[in-house]
Image (tube, rainbow, N blue to C red; front, side, top):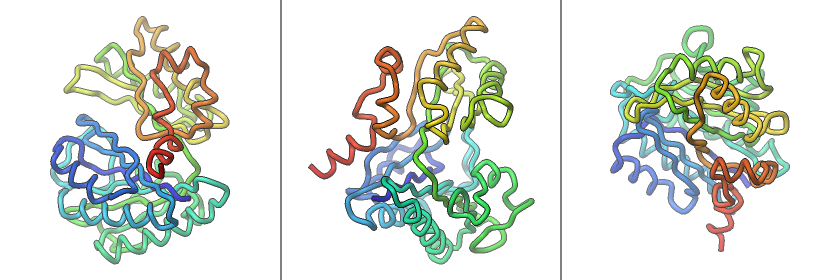
Length: 283
């Protein structure tokens, strides 16, 4: 079974988000929206081998009708309207995710005339998504499609990867400098925790800041370890983590690795797992 987790550069216009969700059909497991990020994350999967692919294609077409990236001003980094589309093998066949990602990338540029950057296992050199964001149109050119960003839709990064967890730790402070310093301390690139990518982001509409993390090597650094370290660093500065927010869904195995006290503190339960949503979909 395949999962696709498209990230779309729209997090404020609820009627548009609802339209995008309807386009996904029965393969939609979850939508996570944030107005300050100006971003929505759609989790797509189903029992059929093409369910995620077809839902992602319908979503991409709806995005092309509804979003103009020139009007976007969210705090989250982005390449385009349909910003990222990773495919994930929910099982033991990662090559299926690679094949689906490459086929989707080919479809996107042909159908929408949008340049595509491949990343993760879909790219021959396995380059990372942060590398694509940093180097796009400067040090690296699109793998497919035109050489310049689409005027309305920008570009899209399409990848294949193992399951990851995206999680935000909210701080009881509006000091972005603190969030940035904690993000630097925990991310692998700067000597922090293995498999952690992190940014400090401001949530201006809510008078708060957060440490936003992608945990890309769950066997090395899981949700509990990452969030506990953020909390330790916040407390060392006299602050506290007030909310743990999972973006999208997480694997059941990762939830099982979390201790009961942590799950209670972070507000994590079985309903946040991919497996629970799939079971509800097929029951």
